Image (cartoon, rainbow, N blue to C red; front, side):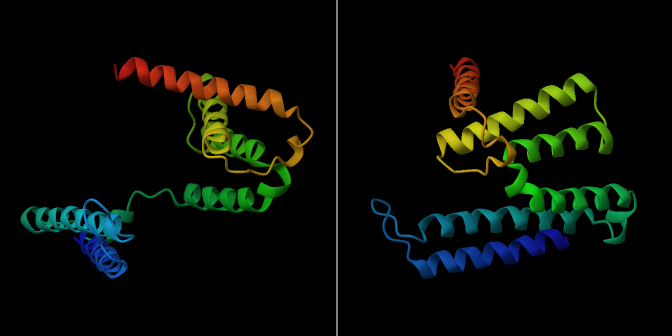
Length: 171
């Protein structure tokens, strides 16, 4: 119930801010057009959560935290802070790869093969999407001397592989 009310307030604010920015017309939308409609969608979803909680009853707020593994939450929070502090010095690839490997090996263990495939694959695919597709410059860190063409070739190969999979799935 409380979560639904929280998101209802956020949705109402986004809707109001979108209206203030100007809606424009459907043929020529204003800068607030998308915000307005996204805010309305957020409000509708939040109302559905509130109505469902009112009909079925909701759990107490304290029950949401009963099974929480606080030591893991604290470890992950510290790891994210370390990630942020070392990001410029070590670079995106090293930091993201280290973070994912530690999470998958020690925090919430999965099979080593799965951890390696997911962490290496997702790190390079995210790097490729950000640097090649979106043209965002990420810090290279200690890999600054690595052959740029090799990393870009890996990135393009990853993007092409993902595009091939999506084109096969959504034919």
